[in-house]
Image 1 (cartoon, helix red, strand yellow):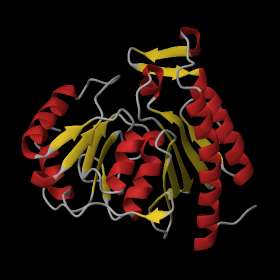
Image 2 (spheres, helix red, strand yellow):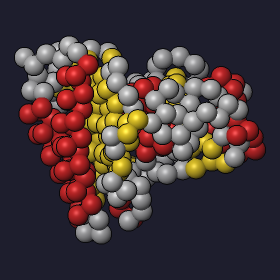
Image 3 (tube, helix red, strand yellow):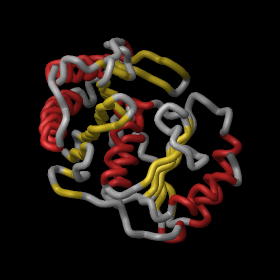
Image 4 (cartoon, helix red, strand yellow):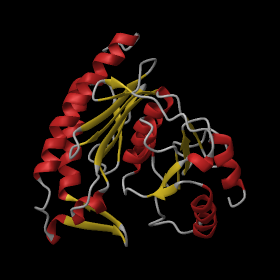
Length: 269
């Protein structure tokens, strides 16, 4: 069994994941504009999977199995179902499928490695901009190999905030709309990219200052969580707790506005 017990091994593993992710990103880029209706399946009214998602996932999981054979997988499209005893890859092969279907950017690949219950590697790749965000346990957060940090903006009144709209679960939509309205009124503005992984990457490098969304899945946020944390930011659930990876409510900020941001959400959720 390959041991991961020091800083350099996490670093080397991350580099291997980046190489694989960029290779798969070239495949995604090559498929832009080549979808037809027969290649798109509907999981819900606004929830889709394409043959491209499935092919991307297979490429990634086959490659990850070679990088760390003992690891299992938590993957969106379910190409693999094996769970590892210690290590598990958390993979979104195409985050922003609806964007991809419509020829809209951004979309991305998101990969994280979990050791027991701890995130130890995170990689997010935007193949159109050729921007690769990465981090590993005890290492720096990076964009294309250069260290990044979250922003230094210290109040919501200075912040540019991002979100994702509800699209399958509308049980909290009234609370969400309430928080959306207040945050519209007290920040520099709100953006919605259509790829949660990219929203989180933009917080890590200081472009955005905060993000919130509910009904997310682990593959949406795992890689971004580690990258933000290693960049100096903070991640919680809507209630300030740590049940963000599997608990379906998610908040990330630069850390400086976390309490102020959560105080807004507490009024509605």
